[in-house]
Image (cartoon, rainbow, N blue to C red; front, side, top):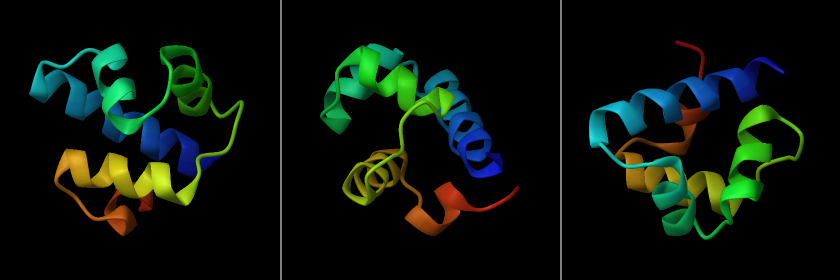
Length: 69
């Protein structure tokens, strides 16, 4: 699950920099807080549309969101 860890790490950094809460970010992405949390932990797979939206909000490409550091 390395790519889940990369996504989660990038989300964590973004949340710290932006000042948004996870709940606020999940709402913008179109997920409930619980769904967002489960996807961050790797319990459920991300849909491509969710990853695209998340990357757009974070100001990065989807490829960057999924890439290794």
